Image 1 (cartoon, rainbow, N blue to C red):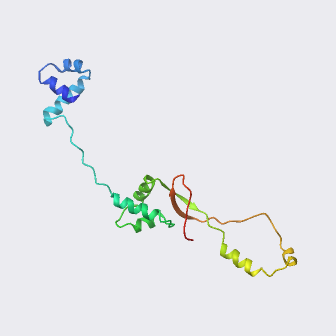
Image 2 (cartoon, helix red, strand yellow):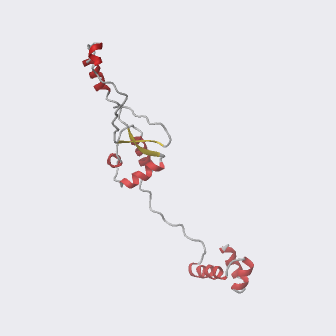
Length: 159
């Protein structure tokens, strides 16, 4: 549109006539011609942007660290990366990767249960009669942060 306005102005008609022909406000014609006379063109220059903080290689490294199944906080992940990045940047990149943080529940203490079973395997029925049985169970929830894909099942390897 701006190039068309400049082309019309080179024939020297009044700005109001150009405004009516082009169907744009008079101020648009005036500002376009002012910009053309000042800079010699109406094309805007490409804006220079700051280079990205994390390269694609850094993002792949971040994804690899997260998907290893280690229970790491964001600050620990930041320390594992090759160059210094703010933790807020890591959080944004993790979110863009489609990952989310959640709290993993601890597994029941299987070693403790096995030790209890071995310790009491010689008990008789009369010994067990003195034990009060109840339906109540108590589980302790862990507070370790793990990362998983949004909507996906949580899978952890190791402990």
